[in-house]
Image 1 (cartoon, helix red, strand yellow):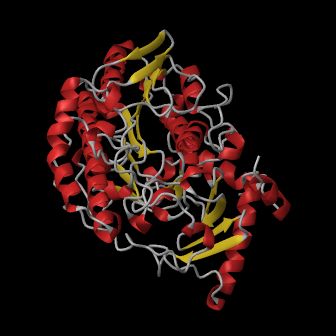
Image 2 (image 1 turned 45 degrees about the horizontal axis):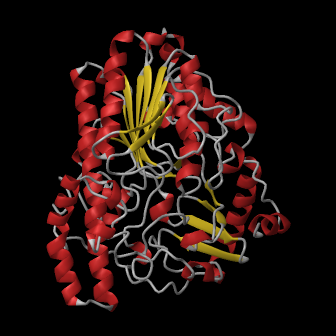
Image 3 (image 1 turned 90 degrees about the vertical axis):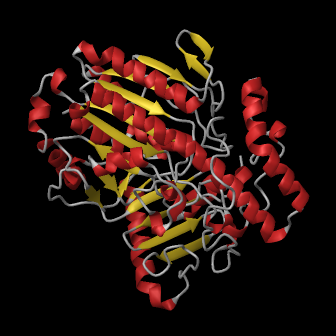
Length: 514
């Protein structure tokens, strides 16, 4: 994007809020940022993604009904740590320094540091997953690494703590305590409430596990995908429900071998035995094989995953109720999102990483009464590089030139504004334990071009005709012009975002094994 055009975007976002820009700190909105881990659009009823309604999320849906839902929001790199770094900085992975699992450089710009410097009280609770200690926060309590579902540990400035309970509930408790304590200070606040759920291994709360019946979830049409019509890297995946999802570690057969058994209390053990034992016995007696085994694993996976989501939705309800009861709801920007999407059986997969739709897409729902009209739907192409400049614009703060994203405020307030016509994506971590090859690509409203550079392979999808991305048309003569246009757009985006991969030689360097 031309620098002048980018400046127009930023100024447009700021111009929409002149009163905020000139307001005293007490007039600026509070920001409550609720961030899940691996929450797929298919598991949020407000999206009804491709007509697949797996569950109901009434509290998350409320944010959309009373505010806005983004129908085409995407991540820049579908993996936990890089997405979190991108959200904080508004920059793509290669510029914020977290392309895979690198330690986050806390000295660089983040929107939290900018808000803190402008008088916001700032706090972050729950999953951090960026190795370094959080900066820009007055208060923080974050999980070490991935964190745990049961009786979670927290790193704090005062030392490590273990708090009894279920992680989603505990993280909400900490966030609500922060909100209540800072309500009377007269300063605006930012609280980042970041859940571990529903990340693998999908450990439901003991009060929720088993509530859903096995066999109640419709299968995606490509659960038994054979990967024909795609490039070779796709078939080399290591994230199939059939061969790679583990009965003990992932699916609690037997429950004593489940991922978190050692840290659970006896009461929690009893609850898990109560919910799982009878089904596990029936499963072992059935001695399922082939597609029958895959179907059973899919149903157990979905039940546990969606039970984790149920807990998130209940806790979102607690947050919304607290804001209303305390009178803060009218001047609080509430955001719900997740670091990336996830596969819930599509292509036979669990996990994320690919540029295909289910993991590329991120949920994004935003409510701000009096500023965002209820029921707003945003269809433009947006990305997690846009979060930081949006929060700054809402607070009336300038956006640093290094930020690559755009404020979403013009879209939220339905102001006429030119917008991007394509998104850039880059996954650096492959192949790794999940067998996902390094790749980058470009997506427009209709087409997607993917480059697997270690394999010198390309894919092209017509999302209008093939929304499930089952057949690449890269070599189809009918798409020659489209292919050339997308290749040119991809090169343009690499240059716009100052990405180091510009030539085949660059690709070879980045794809070489260390």
